[in-house]
Length: 146
Image 1 (tube, rainbow, N blue to C red):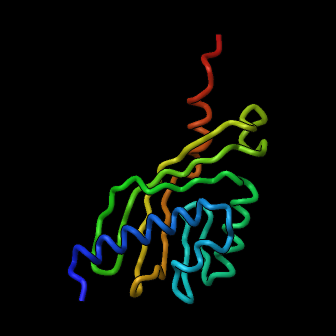
Image 2: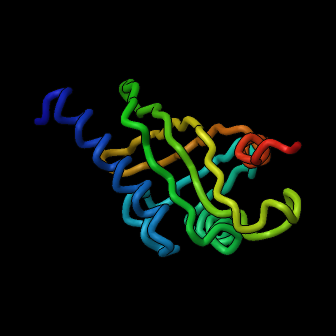
């Protein structure tokens, strides 16, 4: 039986691999890290239950941000059923929904997640981030207007 430190490291490795899969551009890459009936809840986008619903939601995000990257920061907090951790999400603004002046501009947003494990796979991922942070980041990166 693995000791507590081995379990912690295995879970952190799974989270790193999952976020690499979310960032790969391959809609099906995250599937192997999730249980048979996973759930994903996003503080901005809502709750999705089952792989097909999660895949559809994620596909919409990839259509909008094809260069999406999700990178755990390396800060993890463990408890018996799961792990909380911080991350950074980044992409290029591809549409004018935040203003035409931001099309083609990169943005980044920090967030935090909690994942619940069943065995060595993730049963639930709950993501917290600020829906207004992309626009604030883009505005902060604007050159000074004189």
